[in-house]
Structure formats: C-alpha cells, structure tokens
Image (cartoon, rainbow over all chains, first blue to last red; front, side, top):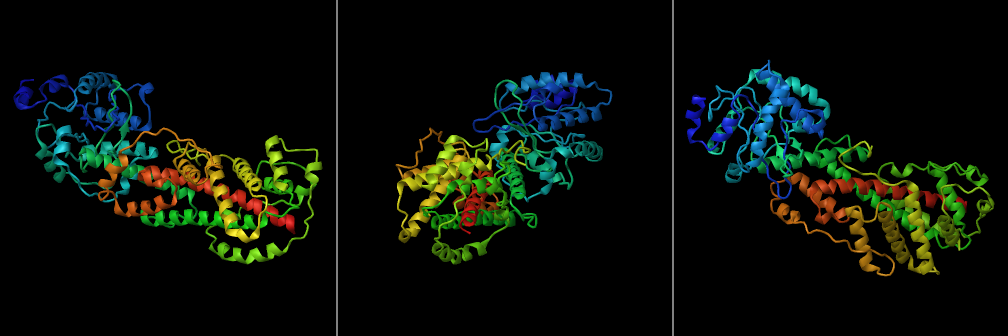
Length: 374
Length: 162
C-alpha cells in the first residue's frame, strides 16, 4: 500500500487507486457522444445482464483475463470488486474509472502485463486530437463477427502471454500515450480487442463505452470514426448480398459503383415499363380482371383453379436478371406494333363468371379492376 | 435474408401490396384522364411513372422510411390534388452540417460514391452514409418488387392481346 501511495501521490487518481487495490481491473474509457451516454456494467457477470453480443465478448474477455492473471480467482468475486470500482467510476465524469492495477504495476510505466486494453482519459482526447489516417483493416470486420468470439478468446490468452506492451494511462500523461502507441505493434490477427459498444444502462446515464484496439489510436474521434467505418462496411456487406453480381468486386469503390449501376438500371426498368404501360393502357375493350388474374398467378400466393389461369402459368423472374440495357433500346421497337394491334382482344372474362374468387382479394380490389376495365 | 439481419431491418411487404397500390393509382389516373390521347404520350408516360413511384412509396411503408417520405413529399409538391402527404414533425438534426465539415476525413472513396448514391436515392441528401446505405437496401428491394409487379402487368396485357 505504501508503495502505491508513493507513486501516486502526485496523481489525480489517488482515490480510485485506493479502491481498486487488490485486483487488476481493466481500464475503461469514457467516450461521450453528443446526446447518448450509455454506461457499461463491467462487473456484470450474471447472464441476465448480458444484453448484446458485445457485452458477451467483453465479459468473456474480462473473465479470461482475470483467470489468466489470477488463476485461483473466483470470478464472482472478481465481479464484485469490479462492481464496486465501477460504481465509483461511473460517477466520475472525466476521470478514469478504474485504473487496472497489479501491485507491481507502476503508474506511468509503460509495461502492463497482459491487459490488452488501453484507456483514454477524456481530457487528452480533446487535447491531442490524434487524427491518424488509418488504413482499412479488414481485421476489424472479422473481429466484429460473433462467430469468431471463441477464437478470439484463445488468441487473447495466447497473446497476453507473449506480449506485454500495453500501458495504462491517466489524465496527467498525454505523452505516454504517444510513446506507447509507437511502441505497440500492430498485429495482423489481433482479434483480442475490438471496439465494442456496450449498451447496458448502469445509472441511467448514456455513455457509449468503447474499447480501443490494441496498437491503434485511442482518442475518441478516431474510435468514433472507426465505429462508423465498421457500420458502413457492415451495411456494404448487406448490400452486397442484395445486389446480384457483387461478389466479383471486393473493394468498396467497385461495389458501390455496382450498387449505383443496379439502382440506375432498376429505375430505368421502371421507366421503360411505364412507357409500355402508357401505350397499352387506353384500349377500351380491355379487361383488367383478366390481366390481374394473370398477374396474380405469377405471384406465389394464388392457387385459384380457373380455366383461364391455367394457360397463363407465367412466372416472370426475368426482370431481376441483371441490367437490361437492351430492353430500353428494344422498347421503342415494340411500341409501334403494339399500337397497331387494336383488334378486339378476346376478353377472357370468365373470371367474373367464375364463382371462385381468391380469398386474398378484397372487395375493393375487385372494384378497382372493374373500374380499370371501363 | 432481411429478417435474419437483426441490426438492419429491410423488410418489404409482399408483392400484392405493391400491386394493389399500383393498380389503385392507375385507376385514379384513368378517372382523371378519360381520354388517353396518344398525342401526349410523354405526358401519359410521365404520369404513369410518377404513379408507379408514388404507389411504390406508399406500399413500402409510407412515412416510415426516409426515402419514401422524401419521394412522397416531392410528389406532393407538384400535384397537390392527387398526392396527399402530411408533414411530419421532424427534429432538426445537426448531424449533416457537422459531418460535412469533416468530410475530408471520411474515406474519400466511399464518400464520392455515396454522393452519387445520394443523387439517386430520394431523400439521400440529408442522410449520413451509413443511414444512406440502409435506405438504399430497402429502396432496392422495393424497386425490384415494383418492377416485378409492372412486368407482370405488362405481360398480362401482352398475353391478353395475343
């Protein structure tokens, strides 16, 4: 205890260190967003407190970390200590909540055994403004996947044994951040850290706590930036599944171009089809009931057994087959013959006579079709 | 696929909802313009196209999506009689201005593509990039659904003719 007091006499974290005296706890960085602040309950070990998968990964990591450091430790007990310190830390705005400590760890020194997390004091984030331009690392994307959680656990423990480069920071030493960052190597498959947003409300204050990755910039802007990038890449993946033919392109730019082309082609298709409809529409002897019957057949829902529907067993999926630029060009060719054909069609109006109406049609819909034929 | 993704909700209604709305708009058109004279073809084409978009926006969820809201608002500006769109009270978000200022720090590759996307997707001008992509996904689904409906309609007409 005396040892600790000597070192920290000049620090501003004295009383927090007192609180977390016997355990090594992880440092948390408070990242204040504009209106949202959601605190994290780091000590929530119980399963009922795990809200989303990032919670789970943080907690599992914490548990693994604690087990590594003190193999004889009882995890509920660890949680208890973490809880107490967390409560105090939550109240303090702008201070580091709990400085993770082992007793031999000296405040301000640059080696902390095992804890792969870095903490960011709030004041220095605003001060240093470390806007580093980061390359797109695909590792983040992988790390954020749920499936790789278990792998991460093993990786974490393995790497904690090998390397001990993570330091612990506090308010008063912004320079040590930079020193430490220069020292810390970036690892390729370092999935032991990811910036996870934990959203458990502890005291009804809304802080989004984000963990900084090892070896990367830790100020709030960069973290927010990283989180935003991950959101974007996640959505890009979603879009990639949606748009056919996107798997060839792996870069963001190519895929986005592809998506833009797809949207444009869809819009052109709509325009083309509306042109077709404009030409076709004004025929007086036009039986929309039958038209709708045919259209309905091609939807998966209708099973109406009526004679005129049998021979119109379309299932038109051709529309979504790629970009039909040629459709637009050939559309003009079609118009003329369509206009000339003005013979009276054979209105297969058996539909009206057909006693069976599909159950899904409302009466309004049927009125509509009647009015369309007029 | 949409329901499997917990984070982003891009469910679109079934095809018949789109069909219903589109046919409704077509019948409205027919009521207004009883004589579809072929000389003003472009006029009719434009009307039908607009009807298609508006019905798609309605079918896709009216005011619950940013793009559909923007589309309906744009349509309501021109035709006050036909398209009814009530203004919804919106909180003013300052996000756009602050983010645009720092736009040079966002990945420029992504941002220029996002700019083009913003021109395509209705209502994209006020959205941040991640939100834009959500809206784009939903928009793409609705567009493809609408295209299917229209294609079926056209094919039905073709068949009816032949």
